[in-house]
Amino acid sequence: MLKDITIGQYFPGRSVIHRLDARIKILISFIFIITIFFVKSFWGYGFVFFFLAVIVGLSAIPVKYVVKGLRPLIFIILLTFSLNTFFTSGGTVLWSVGFLVLTKEGLLQGVFMALRLIFLVSGTSLLTLTTSPIALTDGIENLLKPLRVIKFPAHELAMMMTIALRFIPTLLEETDKIMKAQTARGADFESGNILQRAKALVPLLVPLFISAFRRADELALAMESRCYRGGDNRTRMKILKLDKSDYFALLYTVGFVFLIMWDSYIR
Image (cartoon, rainbow, N blue to C red; front, side, top):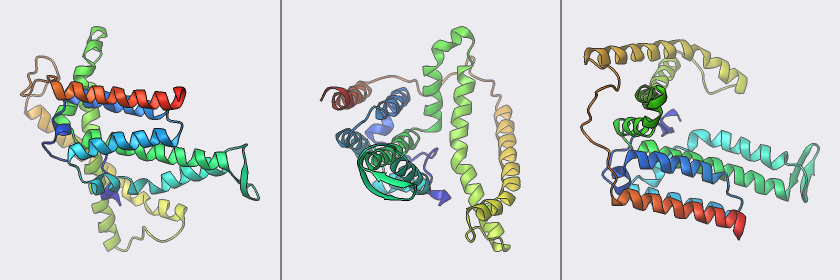
């Protein structure tokens, strides 16, 4: 299950989406996250699905790989659906048992919230799947460059964010190894209720934290041995430069935003 998490992982490729400027992909991701909260109908979510389907198709990333990233979140998605379905007050009652009341409006709200969560995870995962850590760092730093006027540490923040994203799959892999090692020694992580399973995971924390601190120390030592001194006077092998495909991607995103706003407030 831990191996199914795709956030922070990079899927190498030479597709149109992979070649887009990292700054454009970051901006599109932020626009997508903000826009999806304005969706109010199934037509709107249909536009979201089409928007993501085109990107996935152009990125040449297998659909199974994108869907696989949703598997660890099935419980959260079902919980979100249930809470919004049975605890949305008012509306036409379809079914009720005790304090559980199913209404037409609650059912629609539950479906919409579940779809919103699914599309948010899928859309944001595409950013790291199609952007290398180095390009992501350069893109974030470049977007934060205007804040240097107020002495904002743009490079350091971009580096920290990228390292944090990059360490997600590494720590998940380390967690999986520790779980397998302790299972071989008789540990049980599958049986029992939720509280018992959570208690069984406590012994994982100590070796996991030790491993994380060791990796962080090794990374810091490696950077120091290569005379890394932050963003001042640093040069880059690849200079960020916009081309026609980047402008087309922005235009495509603007069209998507227009369709969502038209469906939510004009139609």
